[in-house]
Image: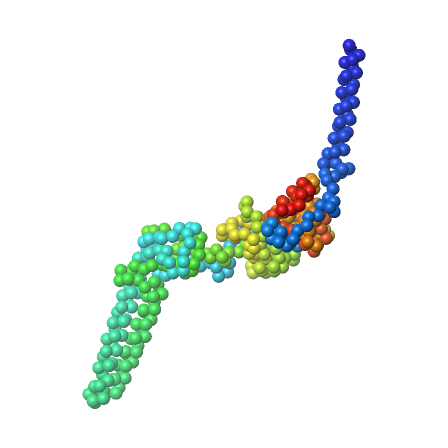
Length: 373
């Protein structure tokens, strides 16, 4: 009995060793046996009509040569895209009609102010207008008197000059009143948004007494936002206008195009200012911290394609090359993925016409050896 038990144990050990070796040879991670071989017969015939119906498009891989270096920056209003609503005259803020994040149109009322100085300006404008009208009337009356000889030419000229001077003064005071918002007799006036956009900051509160020129609110045109980075001149040497950058803003990933590279005007020109615009997604709100990844030249040459262009076929990553009316799977070695794009480390030479879009049915058709519907 003991002999039989010993034989059974020895047999189990030998069987376990044998299965272990066999499973090691069939493991997908083993370099000896690949997960699957892509054969020429895996080509799928595709007409132009099928391409359109299947939601597929033809793309070219983008060349990517270099290693990435992170550079930090912020989203800011571009030059000419930021405006400020300020107090035109000293006074008290009676009502505030906006809050940060609100959208406003150019000319829209954002605050109401009461100002003694504005009341004085309006009173002066009214008095100047009345004086001008009175002197103009007196001059018109003097013209026929001078023609009849009842008034000297010198007196007529004096009245004309007084009328012209009063009219000029009236126009000046009226322009001053208009410049501060055309206040009413009690000094009440409205502050309006100087441009259309989004209120990014409110600098005052109802009841506050503000001086002339103090800021009430900031308005930025979201369409005029841009990313602004400060980089070293050494890294800036790798940048040029039109270059694409991979950018992260919190959980959001997007691509941005460089629109300007210039030396910083201050600080002894120790930094270079880089400005960029988003190209494939909405610009994050002003003030958002962003990180761009700058490609620094290296000897390696790689390509990137949209993530949807890469599929798994027989356990291997492939892209589909389109030529002569058919789609052929091309095995590739993929690298990192970011911003909706995948880096292709090996398998492409550049210039291939690849399929992107709904490529899932292609890999499924090859796996099942069925034609594409």
